[in-house]
Figure 1: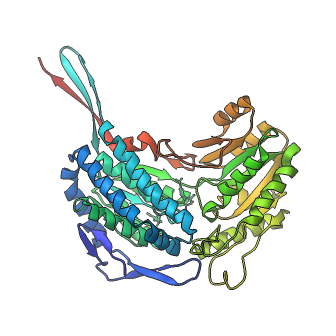
Figure 2 (figure 1 turned 30 degrees about the vertical axis):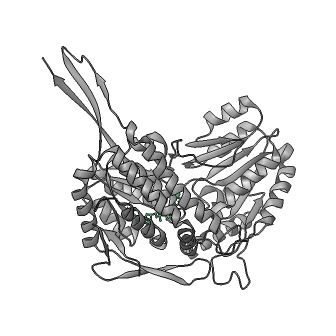
Figure 3 (figure 1 turned 180 degrees about the vertical axis):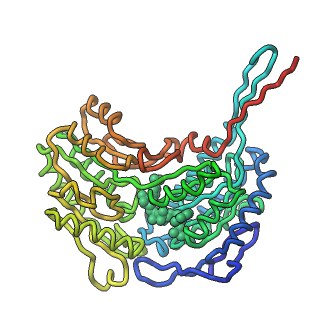
Length: 478
Ligand code: NDP
């Protein structure tokens, strides 16, 4: 059984309850994790509160030293961590390894900013008075992480939190807690002091909510579904806790008549089917100009046919299973709903069958055309390997349809026309826009959704600000 890491100790749940972590490709149990009790959450928060005083004044040099050591230890175990991640999450080994590297990249990026956390100074403010604007860490922060990118999204939260001088309690998704625990263990081995970094496991509705409600948790960072985000806001709101919410999306991709169709088709395929379509920033709707629609769809279909689904541990697999059975059923129902409303299935549209697939949550990569805009695959977030392609008559129509969504996370435009690109980049309601690129994130660019896709930013120097309080001090030196 894996253990939680709290206050410098490996611990079981006080009530001895556990949860099973299952391999989504085979149904086998990978391991069990503790189902934390209220007491366990309290212990983790108290440890983080106790550690905060010293950590908040730890020098940048010391933090950089710890981060460097942690990266060295984590990368020395990259292969086994990636394998464990594939076994619990389902993604192909190569994608799992990218996650481990991204986590280290996050640590490295924020360590690079450690010596740049600074306030400002004004003189005089009023007669003979000095004004300081100072930046200070907030306190105990809770990092609540989903199962789709359990490690890189954990890095998005704990790296800026720790570098800013806060202490952290991580709550990973129940179904993907194992690799997260191993990584925190390696960070402990690197020398992060007792209580600075803790991890508790168990169901979000119990352990997550307990953590958010705890009066000593001052900052909550959450990634997950929009509905959960609303619930978290309602719990954290009355106590005016600092929160960031990275929520769902239904990102559009617009293909103009002058686009490089080969590259656009690759962009749509990678952007939709990476991580079996279970990404917040994924291409979830394509709007292509009618002049080039047939050609584009033909090219995209070719790519979709080449995707080889299978167990992520098999190096030949290009796409793993869906992570949860409920997720498989949801995608299946969205595709069935689209079919009922007249959609034409160009590829896939069903569960995969056969000895390699029968015990897992495998769904075939699916391409749909002639889809009704009222289908649930359009009106809701589709968190799986199914892509609807729509034909449009003009760029303005594409933008209007792209924006007709409660979400505003990302969006992509393919065109060689600078005017269209610039217009699209400002008109598209998205927190992240790509022109002539598939969706890819960079550590230095802030990321966060508009509308119901969330609140606040991760990545970039902006994320660090969310882990700092800005205070003003006036010194009368006369
Ligand atoms: P959930 O909202 O179900 O869960 C996310 C995390 O929150 C898990 O750790 C979960 O724990 C926990 N949780 C669940 N309910 C509560 C609660 N009431 N209080 C506190 N914590 C809770 O999301 P999914 O795991 O299903 O993740 C998929 C979603 O995440 C998609 O909608 C996707 O778009 C979004 N996402 C957004 C990103 C962004 O940056 N905008 C990036 C990646 C994903 P447990 O597992 O135990 O239920």
